[in-house]
Image 1 (cartoon, rainbow, N blue to C red):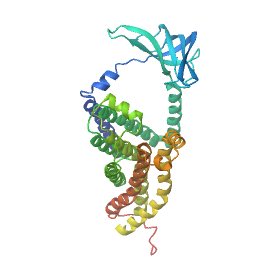
Image 2: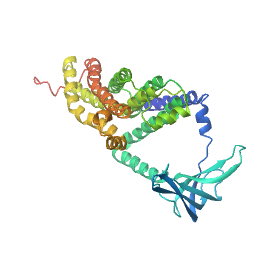
Image 3: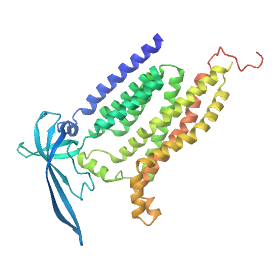
Length: 390
């Protein structure tokens, strides 16, 4: 128990050091994020509606749409202007916001104050509804369920999840926006997430080491395959308007590398799950054998993997399909030719993510089994329940 506690503390300290140092490296000379973080979007609560104005606009032909301006009073709840009452405007135009709900009295929203070129503050404008409260409540329920079922292991799981989120949002994303090498940071981030998660949640043992090595092997296979397919499919990275906006924000960002990063980061969780399942199962198999041998452990790994791969592959592919369902529906509805739809880069990238991620997952099974067979074959078990002679 003492050794397990020491490993946990060491892993946690190393993780914190990585995040702090990694953030400093990622934010160094990162002008884009340094300027973006200066923007202020205070939270506010609407106290009363003042005026509603509609202006007709010609959309083409006989179609007429309306731009709506809703003027309201709001009390600022955060930031340097906290407590002040301000007059703000919500602008609803069919060109941009479509069918966004009109604000009502009592709504909690985010505001933005315009600034002239001389730095003089002007009018306040509606930015977005404040949705963080509902998300926080849902997050608390999620954490509560983890603690209820996991007890101490649940606490470690939450810490590992927090470390993972910090590694993504505090280190990885700032590094990308800062124009640094996305390929290198993706591999580093995947390796860090793997080792920090297994060390914090499971501690140090041959089981966690084989898990980490098998997982990294699967990720590297997925990464190598992505690089090969990027060239064969002649991808540009311009899959949607978000990619175009990203390039406008920072011209040094490599969009093909974004595809690489998206595939690996998206698959790392499922790959890690398969790896720990194989490693843990084979550890129990080896523990029940009087003389664990390479061939038996390897064969057992393949048999266990057969039961896992069906559901896990489905999970990964369905996750990718679900995340891009609206785009698939739109493109399918607006194109008569399915041949063209399935050759559009947006759709090709989604298919590539699903297939490469699944291949990485599938190769994790033999890779983890191989590592386990090498490391577990020397295990001397004190349990001989499977020894027929005794």
